[in-house]
Image (cartoon, rainbow, N blue to C red; front, side):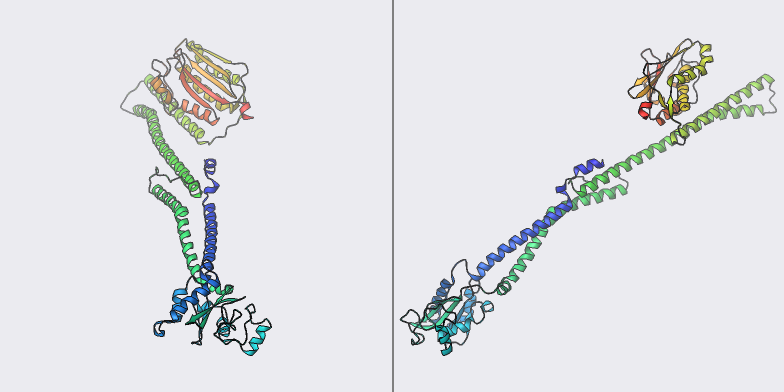
Length: 518
């Protein structure tokens, strides 16, 4: 059963493996989704997916040129930039001639000093900065402008001082023009802000999304892995409670192929064993009650006879002649011996069935057993004219067992056969090999045993004359065949009763041989 339970368990259905693989899959999925979200959000945050920095600078410059042309009271540039360009757009800076501030759509993530540099480009550099510019400093890369060009006017060379439409390595620029006059500048960085700025920008969103994904994954794992397991554990708990309440027929659910199902299989095996032991105890109790009743009945018969005759012999007012007194005393002696025989058989049967006696096993020649049986019953056989033949087939091996107990079993069956064989009949003892065992058959020519009584001939206190009518020899105590069965079973053999085709009874022993012992 344990091998079947282990075979039924499959490693990929193991609860430990499912939990481990489920968590690995959950973490892998979480990492993939988080990475994908981070990439997607970075693209969304910095606006790389929809437009370049130059396009964004032109877009914002044109938009602000239109908005700033409206009455000043109706326009708040800071709120406007954060509302319209706060999400999905790369951060940028707007500087105006009319305001000392630098405005941004996302003030917290703009690169350091970007607004200051933008103002310098808008208002023009100082003499020192101009010198650095011409030497290739201050970012470089902008088309050199005529230093004499006044700020805010077109440059014949394509630029205008540090303003105009142009490009530097670190940023893209676009002019905010109102009525043909440059009133401001839009500066969009060419590169995203530093990593710590990006992380600070998207970390809260990623954290909440990660918590949501972890919760959803844990819920899915609980539903897929733990919910069926919990249901089967509840079934096991209910079965254990039912077993404790005295309902032995309840069993746990064995489906699943994991550790819980193995536990359920073990529990069900335990429940089956407990049920079988309870049934065996109940049957043992019933057998004990029957035995007490049978023993009481069998002992009461001779005891009643002994008591009656003893009371009769003790009556002073009853005058008995010597012959009657001797006859009564003979009956008392006979009943005493019968009572002694019953008690002896009961003690012998109890030792055999209880395992309280050690068998002295050795090789036994079956012909020697047959000879001792014939010698013991020879006077009775001659008196009644019954023939007893014993033979062993060629190749019959030696039996292996206790010679005294095996002889006792054969003597009991032979005595039973002789008792129920009519005068002039025949009793046959045969031995032959049966595989690695020895088959011994004792058959008679008596009336046989009615088929309905055959299953009960080895029961305690079974009376042979109740099933073999027509015999003049009374039966014994009813324990002889029970002792025979106990002896044969203690040797690891089998014993069967049947009827021969001619009508007589036949008893068969299957005993271990020396080959089996080796």
